[in-house]
Every structure is written in structure tokens, then in C-alpha cells.
Image: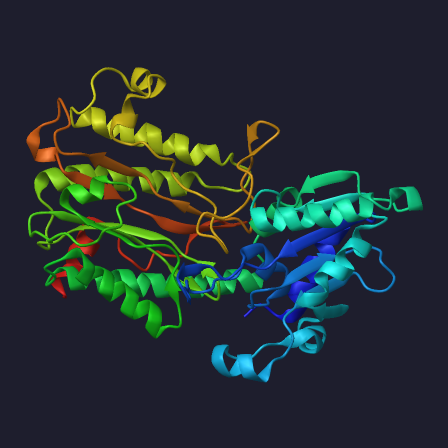
Length: 436
């Protein structure tokens, strides 16, 4: 786990970036109603967790750089024996100071009385505007209360800045503790993918393959990092297919896009394999084109290389493969310039990975693709999707969707594949299936 001292270090770094005169406000995730008096499973807000390591709702972190009485303040629920009997233990304000190393903590019920006073005299407010409409209105109410006292000498903030401009950059670069958790998350996802591959050999429906994933996640104290995609046949051509309830047919490929969330850190793996245990010739031809693209993309990932180089590499190799198979006509250059490949490859080749499966962080700086640096973690996931009825495509290639995705840690020595434990080559996949 990430040590408590690291959370405190993150808060100090963030306050140093904001500088004195600022106030930073970070609410916890709310509990969300599912129906009547039942709620969705609670999942802490990633930014709030990153700065506190505190996993309760009804809490607000307030950072006040340079404040003599204390810079790191937490508002949270008080201890309540009756409510804790129903919902589990609470840390309480006293526990927050001791356990989370806050400078001070107060009952969440006191937030409305205390926060306006903390805003007064601060020149800038950092906050995630527009993320929570209810909290936006509450914050504006506090600001208006300070403004109402302006004639009495109160000094309200005059600058309002998006918190993500500072915090996203911190979260983009993973610490040693975070990388350890991401390795564990990846290991769980690897085991789950292999279990899903084996389960598909005897499955009648997609949900039976999904059940194999879920069993492994729960056994290792993890949950899915997103709704798993288990699509067989033409369903694999639907990029965000989530029904996972169709019959599994022996002649089809099955695309499984799934990841584990362990200690709030995500992994994200996609593999595509033949339910029968062996690739047909058309399936093999398309699969080899995607695998060649992924292999070249990972090779291209080096410190100092623009991030967009990965996608450009995927486009080039996939387009070349489509031309070789006769699915595109003309020259490589013209097909790339006209984006003809988007008929079969319509998404980007990856995304940042961390506390969120589509993690925070800018892809461009100053209008240019940012350069890869050690500590970044991202996915590499080229694919080809040939939906049924696609004009001009031979029937043997239709209803085939293929994606191959791995999680890559950028190191000084080059890319490290955190999810390489799941075979992605044809012989390796067929060997796993034969062992089912």
C-alpha cells in the first residue's frame, strides 16, 4: 500500500504548485442512489483519494497554503455508534488527524460555518468546477457570503482556477508505491484473462466468460476497473459492447476487454481468441496485422519520444496490413492522408492509466504531443473491426473484431509490459486454449 507519508508529500507538492494566497477544495465522492433506499457501491473520488487515502463519503479536503493555524484540513463524519453498527466504522475528526496526518479536522456539519472564513483573504480558488453541480452551488453560496461582507473589509477571492491543471500533472507520474499497486492490479487482471480464455472453451454464453473474470477479481480483493467487454462474433466489432449475454459459437473469435481495480488502481487488458481453440486462416491474417502493429507500437515507446508516435505507428502498420490483404486500395501514403483506415480502425491506440482506467494527464503541451517520461503508465491497444455487411469486404473477413491491449510502464530503460503474462501471439493463445 501507499504509505501515509506519501499522501502528505502529495499535499505539500500540490500546495507548493498553488503557492500562498490560494485555497484548494477537494470533495469526496458522494454516495449515489441506485433506487429508493439502495445505493451504488461506493467508490472514492480519485483526486480525493490521491491526496488523503481516506475512503469515506461526506468529506471535504481543504488545503490553505501558508496558513499558520494549519494548512491541511479535513471535514468528515463524526463517530456515531448507532450508524456505525449499520454501515461500518468511521474514522472521525480525531482519527483523521492521527491516522491521516492532517493538521486539523472538523465535523462535516461544521463546513458551512467554517469554509467562508477560510475563503476570506484568499486570492485564488482551485476546485473542479462543473464536476458536481450541487457542490458548485454550495461553493458559490460561500463565496457570496464573503462578498456580502466586502464593505466591512472582507477580501473575497478574485481568481477561480481548475484544480486539474495542477493535480493532473502530479497524478500522471507514478511513484514507486503506486507502481507496486499497479503491478498487483495487472497480475490479477492477467490471471483473470487466462481464466476467461479457458472458460470460453466450454461456455455457451458470453456471461459465463465474464463470470470467470469476476471470480478471479473477487478472490484477490479486487473489482472490475470498468464494465468488462466480452463480445463474440460480430459483437466484438462494437467498441463498447457490454451486454455480454449472446451465445458463444465455436467458429467465432471472442474479444475480452477487462481489467482489475486493486486498491483503487486500474489495469486494462484486451485479448482476442478463437472459441474453437484454433484461428481460421482469415482470422489469423487479421490477427497478425494487429499483433504486428502492437509490437511496433511498444518498440516505438522510448523516453523522449512524442506520445502521438505510438498512434502514428499503429496507423501505419495497420494500414499496410489492410493493403496487403486487399481491404484497402492505393498507396500507403494516400490511405493514411485520407484516413481510409478509419473504416476499420476508428479509435486511438491508448490512454493514460492509474487511479482511473482512462487516467488524467495532458496528451499535448503547448499544442504539441508531450514527450514520454519515466513513471508514465499507458495502454497500447490497436485493433481492426470489420462489421457484418461492410461493403467491398469479402465475407470471410466480416464479423471479425480484434483488439490487443497491454499496460506499459515507461522506464529509463524503455517500455515495461505489465500485462505480458497473458500470451498475445497465436501459438501462445492456442496453447492456453488447448490446456483448458
